[in-house]
Amino acid sequence: MLKRILVLAVALFATTALAQEAKIKVGDRLKMTCEEEPTLNKEYTVTAQGVILVDFIGAVHVEGNTEAEAVRIVSARLVDERILRRATVTIKIVNSNVAPVTYRGAVQATGQEPHRTGLRLSDIVRKAKPREDTDLARIEIRSRDGGTKYVDFTRFNPESNANNPLLQPGDTVTFIVKTAPGLVVLLGGVESPGGVTWEKGMTVRSAIAKAGGFAALAVNTTVRLERPGQNAVTLDLSKPGVDMPVLEGDRILVAMRENRSYVTVSGAVNKGGFIEHKPGMTLTQAIEAGGGLRADANPERIRVTRNGQSQSVNYRFNELKSGRTTDPVLNAGDKVMVDPKSMRKTDLLKSLTMLALLYILIGQ
Image 1 (cartoon, rainbow, N blue to C red):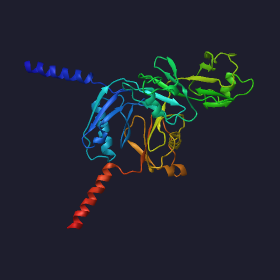
Image 2: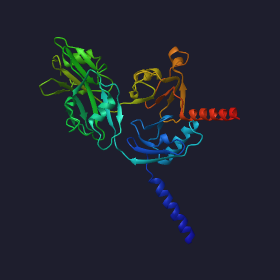
Image 3: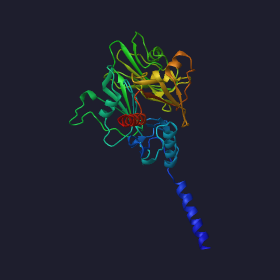
Image 4: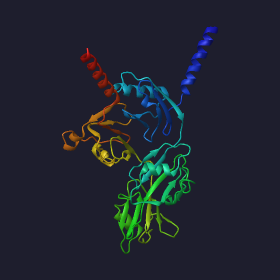
């Protein structure tokens, strides 16, 4: 009888422990170690697409899995793709539900930065690499609760950190285009964000039309007109007849829904990061949206991992461009990894081993 009670108690304890095992979520920080490849020993943040970007194998979908399940997924990828013969991996959730900081707009690189204590606007400016037409005197920071403030980064003082605020989890940093004479700048939910030439009699509606009209994810009930020296005016353009004249130097900001979908382009591309997915987007279009291949890219090895799958499919860029291979259509959440030409560490070790053996044989 006592033996039966002990068995039931152990079974109940095991069942409870399994039920309470944490699942990996977007924004989690994962600490990974690999005995066979120490360069993988670092922290990874789960992106909005539920993936972590791991050296050698690219994007790995881990969202919704336990730590043990994630270990099996990563280990299998490392072995299946012949990076390692054996992969002894550990994965631990070290900081759950910390939302990353998103940066976008008039910059050379858009993406997300894992939030950490002490993260400041200057850190994001360095990552985003503002363009020549970026208005650093008016950087927008929007918090998760919708609060918005503008920072004049041209007055940044590195000694006192003046005009260099600390960022909070979930903040979105938007870099705005400078307003040039004779232009009206449109941002957000329009088909062609940027400057349009001001014309006499131009209104908010006609300026939006000149920028290609509302984008698919635009919120036409929240259109903000900004004019230097005046308070911003918010218009609900879903109502017939609502409009307003536009002057040179005005800015029009069209709000967008936040449930945008992305594909991830990483590796040997000029920009990379999260590329907004559009219906019908192909692999070559996604690579072009990521700034195109870098000079050190290996065009013979472009890997696509479909959303929710662990195995990748390899494509050759030149065959895609020439039409010899059908340019695959990507789905939201797909991952694209462009390998560099440089030799992998495991291949380099093999080559060095062969050279050492040849040296020994010749020496004998």
